[in-house]
Amino acid sequence: MSIPAPGFADTYTFEPVVEGLDTPWAFGFLPGGGILITERDGKLLHFSGTKRVEVAGLPDITADGQGGLLDILIPRDFATSREVFLTYVTKQGWRGSGTALFRGVLSEDGARLTQGKTIFEMSKTGTGGRHFGSRIVEGQDGTIYMTIGDRGDDATAQDRASHNGSVLRLSRDGQPLASNPFTKDSAFQPEIFSYGHRNPQGLAIDGQGQVWAVEHGARGGDEVNLIQPGANYGWPVISYGTHYSGAKIGEGTAKAGLEQPKFYWDPSIAPSGMAIHDGSGNQEWKGDMFVGSLKFDYIARLEGAPLREVEQISGPETERVRDVRQGPDGAIWFLSVGQGALYKIAQ
Image: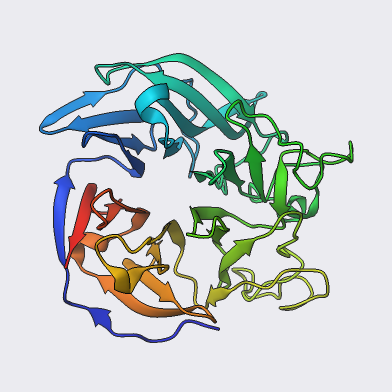
């Protein structure tokens, strides 16, 4: 299951859509053609045609290492609700910080979030600006899935009394769902849907409504996981990587009761951003996964069962790919941190 050696694709054209971005982290599509883009240092930008507006009304954001203003979710009912969801890093205590979820209503002119409210905040304060996770997607039933990293504190990913190292399942108000796997045990955080994750920075829903996540390993062992309710994905008990020092992680690569990844990379590609194509405009891509690489500057295309990497989409434009999404036109769009730009892939 380690990384294969497919050829780099040279049949694509990368069309710049937005340029001049400063450490972009995520983007989302508005009905009618507008685009919202987050910048990690704390700006939310609204692009519509040639117009660029910095959106007001954001929460107090702490730019802390890898964290700041992070993911964005524009729900399916935006045309009527005008709600926008953002994840961000908030200050916790004197020195700590953690991942939070914010909801606001975008004004008709697209210049301000009103009725803003932080509807969820992780329980355990972390120090050091690492492993915030922070992807959010909307499930087929309208619930929200959200990832939280282990905050660089490995063992906490196995502690269900902490939100660290988990995928959460929340209502639109940021509350745990009664059908979540750990709601009946007061010792556990009721928002947790799965746990034992290191730092999930990609999250997507497939055509069957299944939840998939891609997460950073340490030195090797980046994983693609099919997320099941109540499941333990093993970090740091099992891993296909090693510590950065070269030391062994945990007890090996497998253990009874712990989930195996559907695919892993070794060496690590530093994955961030994930899209699962629905086949619109390209039936050959239906069900394929597209995952950005921050380390090796390409977009991985994965397909099949067992899952395998079949293509590496690469060019100067794919420098440090942070977010990948399927656009309304069926094309794959992505954010390049290295280029400070949003691109669309044309075949």
